[in-house]
Image (tube, rainbow, N blue to C red; front, side, top):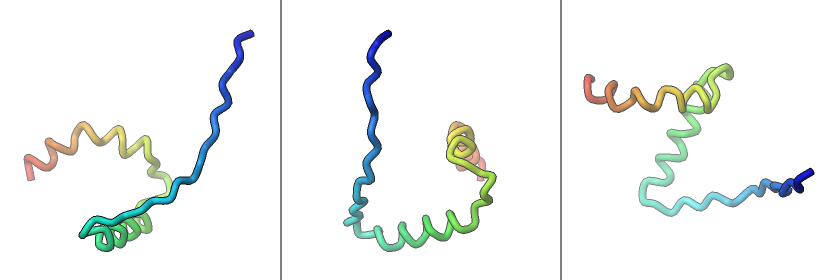
Length: 58
């Protein structure tokens, strides 16, 4: 049997220092609170190829 490498997850601190960091953080929290629990990261990733077309046709 081949030895498997042990993977460890670490919680890295997120340091936002951009000029718009405060607004971005509030916007992300606002969006997250309004997103249904049934919508997960994989759903959003699946939609990502269509975003440029939706933006271009608006």
